[in-house]
Length: 317
Image 1 (spheres, rainbow, N blue to C red):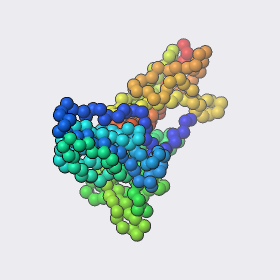
Image 2: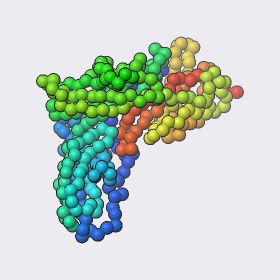
Image 3: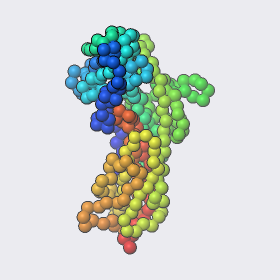
């Protein structure tokens, strides 16, 4: 049976799902009156897990005056076109990185260049998985944070009485809330960062929500013939689905993975079985499950949701 490997310890920034939006904010106004703002987003050296040159932060969201926003290119560069003269506020804010607010002054008809915005990693990542050998769901989430003075952190959740309860990690970053959090409900999380002297240096809040992924077809214990078709629940957001199918080997008394074609990165919540030329399914008992991976608008991996397994019988005729 396929093992579901948890990869929440690594910050995964997925490039390529979004293109730079810098051209979207061009407006037809008098260039002699307005100005353009050119800048770059960088992150602290401590966040070296990003593994990019010169600490450049690509594909992050930069916000102007709390309203207009652009996505940086792969070098962390951004531009706002046709900005009116006066004082403005810039900041970085997306699912992973945030910065303080930077106040800038734009002069009439003079472009503003060389702006540097320092962003810090500030992220709560969630995921669920189905541990079949234990016959239950595990609800896990990871807290990833960065700060030059960071030495330790504490994570709390808000209970039904309005009190924040301390959570103990199962390792450095992973928190198990299987017996605490219900499916479909949002939970408020408070994260506190401390320096080596146990002094509070920063805190932030976020929400965690766990979802179930339901399988529709074939229903449990269906008898399937011909070319099997699979359907499951469609989740909201930017989702890619992977489907896995296993055959029960009576000889080995265990589940054998069925190697498929094009069963990864599906954008629709359905799949028609595809096998290599000349291959066919054996008659017998099968198990299947679907893994859904959700991404943000900027292409950041957010969460992984795995269904409970479904079971069916297959006969060639």
